[in-house]
Amino acid sequence: MKISLCMIVKNEADILHRCLESAYPWVNEIIVVDTGSADGTKEIARRFTGNIYDFPWGDDFAKARNFSIAKARHDWVLVLDADEIVTEFDHGNVALFAKSDRSVAGRITLVNLLEGQWGATSHTEKVSRFFNRRFFHYEGIIHEQIIPNNSQPYQTHPIGIKVEHLGYIQAIMRKKDKLQRNITLLQQAIEMRAEDPYLYYQLGQSYYTAKAYDKACANFERALTLPVNFACEYAEDLVEGYGYALINSGKYSEALEIERFALYYRRSPDFCFLMGLVYMNNALFDKAMEQFLRCIGPLHGKIQGVESYLALYNVAVIYECLGNKSEAVTYYERCGDYEPARTRLSLLRQNGKP
Image (tube, rainbow, N blue to C red; front, side, top):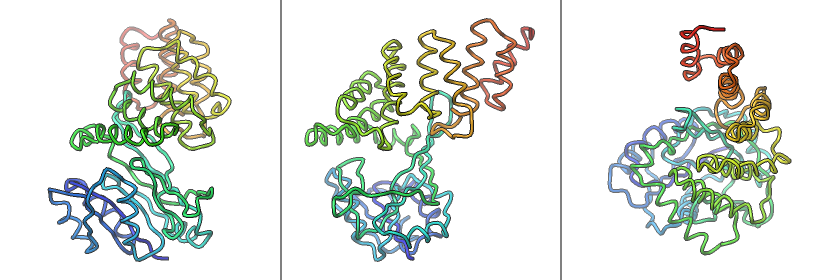
C-alpha cells in the first residue's frame, strides 16, 4: 500500500513545515496545491516534495480538493491542512484497513486545540480523511465533504491516525481572517442549498467562534427546524452548540429546551455536561449535580475534562454556593491539578476548612 498526502495551501509559511515534517515519514508522495500564496509557502513545500501545483482560487474548496487528489499517483490518499500535525500513525492498522473494502472511508482522530472558557483545552472528533480516490470525490464550496462517486450511502471506519489541529487558536484565526471568509462562503452556499441543516450548523459554529452568540443561536435553531438525521456525527455538535450559544447569550430558560434531545444523547458525557450547565444556570442545582455526576466514568468526552475534572469542579462550585464547604472541598480535591480547583481550595483553606 502506498499513500499520497494531498493538501491545498495559501500563505502558510509559518506553519507548513511542522505539518509536512510530521506526515513525511508515513506517506509515499506529497501533493501540494497552492491557491495563491504571496509568502514563502512554496519554498517550504519544496523541501519535502517537487509535486507543487498552482490552482486559481475560486471560492470553492471542493474544486481545489478534487484537483489535488487528481494529481496523486497512488489510489489511497490522506488529506491534511497546513495547520494540522500528525501525532500518531499506526501503519499496521492503516495498511490492514486499506486491504479491506476500498469503498469504505477511513476516519482519523482530529484533536482541535482551543482557547476556551476553561482555558487551554481540546475538542476531539472523527473525520473522514483517508480514502481511495477512485471511489470518492469532494463536494461543497466550504466545509467540503467526501461523496461516493456512485452517490450511494457509504460506511466509515476509524483508523490509527491522530492529528492535532491548531486552526482554532485565536492568533492563527485572526491572522488568516478565517472566520469572515468562512461566514461569507457559508452564506453563499446557503443561497444554493437553503434547506441543508449542515450548512446552518457550520454557519452557527463560525458565529459562535466569533462570539456572535445571538447569530449563532439563530443559525443553530434554523438547522434544528430542518430534517436532521440525529445519527449523523455532526448532529450532537449541533445540539450542544445551540445549548452553549443560548447560555452565552444569557437565554438560560430557553436553553432548557435542550432537554428534548436527551432521547439521543443521554449517555454522552458532553451532552450531560451541557445539561448540567443549563440546570445550573437555572438554579436547578439538584438536577445540575445529577448531570455532572453522570459525566464521570470511562467514556471520554469530546471536550477535554468533561468526564473528570470539569464535571467535578462544577459539583464543587454548587456545594460551595449552597454553603456546604466540606463537600465542596472533597470535590475540589478530586479535580487533581486543575488550576481553578486548586485556587478555590486554597481560598477555602485560608478561610478555615469546616
